[in-house]
Length: 118
Image (cartoon, rainbow, N blue to C red):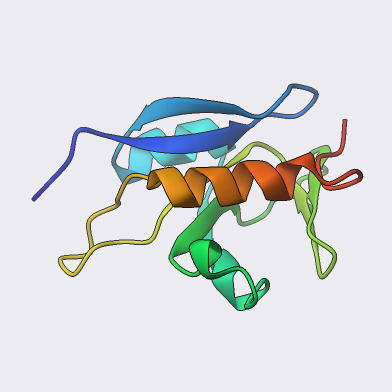
């Protein structure tokens, strides 16, 4: 079922991460990150955190090349530009909300000193 919005954690350069609803759709998401999007499956980088298994990080595919400010340090990589965490797509390929457990896991990850770059 196509959703109009999804619950995400939005990380904007120089701002505190915040929970919000974002409109779904490629153009909307490109507008948020300021360019082409890349979906990074977060669970692959944090396999011991089960609640992050079905979470994707949506970021600007060319953020570093475009010289956007760094926003996240995930240990294995640095993310440049605005980005957001969302639930992985459902069986029909549609974006999904972060569950309460996923939201808590993302907020815990972002609370680690040095992860959010300001």
